[in-house]
Image 1 (spheres, rainbow, N blue to C red):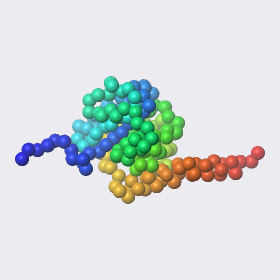
Image 2 (image 1 turned 30 degrees about the horizontal axis):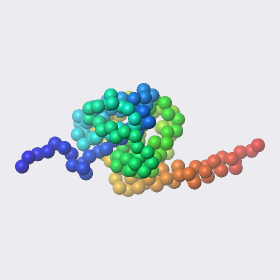
Image 3 (image 1 turned 45 degrees about the horizontal axis):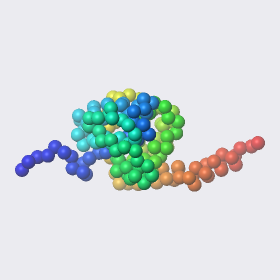
Image 4 (image 1 turned 90 degrees about the horizontal axis):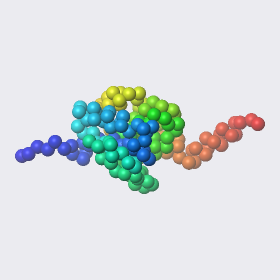
Length: 177
């Protein structure tokens, strides 16, 4: 019998990166690709999927899926085990909560408000260098079913439109003019 070196579907660990423009230097996708290539040496089950426009310079072991919106983007998040947000400048990116609402944790570069979002969701990590991200990816184990459900519940309960509206109501109710 012949042996295959391709991981079975159940063994694949899908890591995603989403950016409107994959070539935008501020989005820093090259860092995610570099960390992935290092991590893949010790974890052959990793697959990197890039979502967004352009990005032809990120060849190699990546899959570019082009732009996705709406339901297709939601479906993408639900197939990912982890999302990498390598941006050099972000305040409160929706991509973290969108991914979390589908049970996908985030590894985010420690910039702006990303750390607070990751902490609020209770799953994922921040990182500060290519080597740190490579370590997170190479040692990554996908969430269990319960952990994924907990992440989805947390993201939907804290960041749903109704929850956000209530948070605004609470702030304005407490304000004295």
